[in-house]
Image: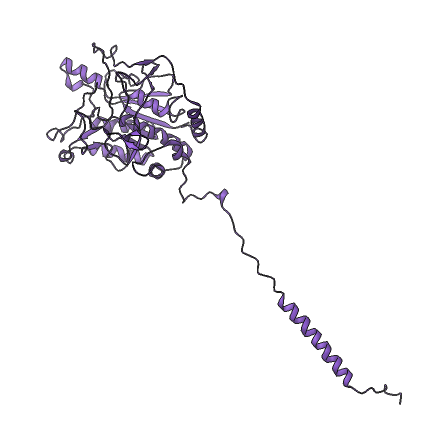
Length: 391
């Protein structure tokens, strides 16, 4: 279940296989390999979510700002099951294109990712619409290997990743989540043909879609810490690492500008129920940190519908906790950059009135009194004469 494909220098020129490098998932796989019957199984939970009062209060406050309503999030992964907790529609299928079924998840991965983004009870953006693109499958890859048909093994390539991004853009997705990534040794990365992926990412940017990708896991048989990870290394992609604690990066996580909780204690199970994420199947990894950021972006798209992808990315980056760039949904949706001054909060300060001049009236009064005294003095100095004609 955790078979990882790491691209060596010899094969990097033509193709980069998309491997389980962003998820640490251990669990049993049924012995039979028929695609229509035998898929990976999980440890089911008899009970659904039982959130604490504190968590319920947090979600109520978070969703008073936005719920993701009207936002389409493409999940490029192993397929997303039609689960009661999700609003999901089918996209392209690059695993079995001859018999497409993107709403079938045989790997216990894409459905878990979608649940983190938009699960009704536990998802970050419960009203967002999920668009499922099945681009790779460890289950089908193992089955093809047993049948000696490696060319039809369900292994994703950079070409199919580019086509998946194009399909997401054509469907009008505003957020694109890529949790299954490709790791390439540094000395081989320059020889990888990435033109198709770069073109698809440019088109996504121009169409207004934000792309989020897992940073990859450094595990046995998987990525190395210094590997170049596609598409996480692209400038227009938000790369997300996984946290082990609220402030510490998980030991397996490749470092990235952003990080989020990489564990899912209670996940959506493709059969329609819940998986505990305990025992044989542990859901942890950068695969499950990336969708937390994608869900947060869905909230931001609804809250700020006029923002460009660059502006939305900047909101996430600016609101993240310094250090490992920890993304916290409520902090992100309530963050206001200093440059955005709300008009309803602006205060117009009127100029102070000029001080009343009381000195001049006093001077005039004094001069008037002085003038009166002078007149009296002059008048008193004149000799009294009788009126003319009375002499």
